[in-house]
Image 1: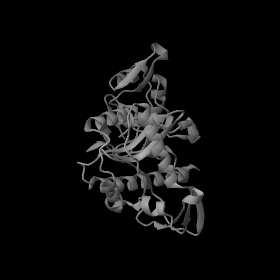
Image 2 (image 1 turned 90 degrees about the vertical axis):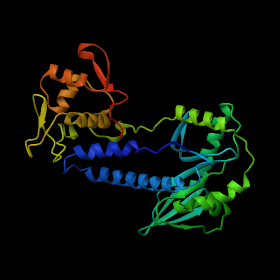
Image 3 (image 1 turned 135 degrees about the vertical axis):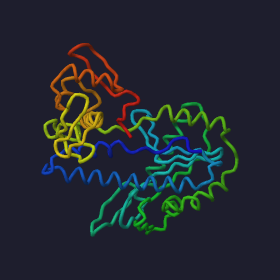
Length: 325
């Protein structure tokens, strides 16, 4: 059973919103295009892993994708988690390209790509640390978990995996996504004693879902000023920014398209780029509206939470506002 599906990473939607509104000749355009490209590639690899996990017999596992749990003074994140009565399998997904050489004895992995050499922390150690954190988390909440067997999935089909020192952990724990069933099968045979009841698993899943805290990037760290972003409502037909409000409709001066709700996407862009709160004045400035009363009426028709009074009134996204797709 899949208890939690994977959602689009927050960074992807943020970078998409930024690129929609950065001028064509902005000096950091290529930087954000590269960031978006890398995030999309990683997400594509994770979805490929999800597909191969979906081919496993679901009667044996409860599956959660992309969970992030607060623990002590930090968080730990697990890309895919498989829970059975006798075994828990955390999987860390890595979309590395090129040739990958694993050296667990030195806690590092070396990537060779396009004539360059780059050192990364050992993914096996990372996923073992995540497993230990999850084990400690479950014990704090009065569960006695079964054995953990962490794995690393290399989701880039073009990557070449090498194990120069013939380390057994590399051969046991690292795999390409299509090989997941064959990689975990020996452990299913090894661990057949039930430690968790079905009710225990349900309780663990409810706990993890309740404690799950999605990662929200620090928008200030993007180092973009408000003035660098193009303001206005984007035409859903030709993608030109700068639609004008005519009574109940938005009209595009370039292609003539009209829309009743094009401002919703613009407001979403504002929240993604500038943070999850907006005032009437900021709403008018960003969308190009002059009437305070018209702006208030438009804001009141959206699923937004309202706090404060009069000029101090602030609007934040409600539960059903489409901030994250």
